[in-house]
Amino acid sequence: MRLYLMRHGETNWNKEGRIQGSADIELNENGIALAYQTLEGIEKAGIHFDHIYSSPYVRAYKTAEILSKGVIPIETDNRVKEMDFGSYEGVPLAEIASKPEYKNMHNFFIDPDHFVPEEGMESYEDSFKRIDEFYHEKLLADIDQYNHVLIVCHGAIIRSFIAYLCHKSIGDLWNMKQPNCALNIFDITKEKATLIEMAKIVYDKSLLPNRKYT
Image (cartoon, rainbow, N blue to C red; front, side):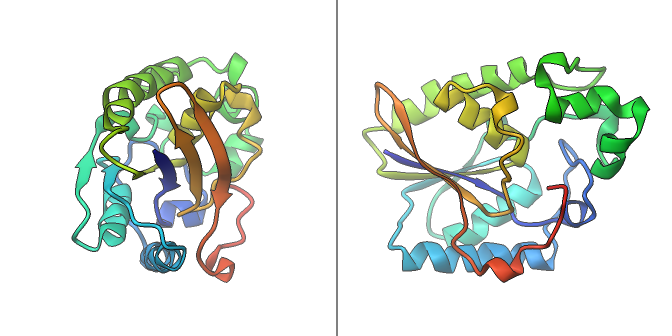
């Protein structure tokens, strides 16, 4: 199976550099344009998805709908939704990086081993648990049924997914950008997962906003 992990299109909170998490924020106009341009790039590359899994959040599901063209089945699954950041949702990432009172949340990105989930927040361990369940109950079960599977989800859970599949520390992945609508490509067998390409962009890169925090 060829597996594609893709981050959703841009939202206004992405544009403003705010933490989204479980906040159900819609795509903005540029996010919709990114999804359509990504569809064009995928079609030019000759990729044809057999099945699409999506996070239930509207920014991911709308992206999946555009890529499906109303033809490819879309299945939502809570196990690929974004991590929950509790009271930090909506806070600008620039403040997280600069204000001492946000040190613990800053550790989530720069020093995960010292991040301590606060009330209402999800731990990396919890995200790995749901990824493990999804991988075994869905992807490995699909392996003889589908050749190309797309998962449309979110930045933090994608990094967790890559860390899980590649047996890496999550701390190794936060310095690697995951732009909106970027594709992470794996070959999956019953025995192992092999990373083919990370954060592949198939649309016009001039559409990417120049943001320090993503």
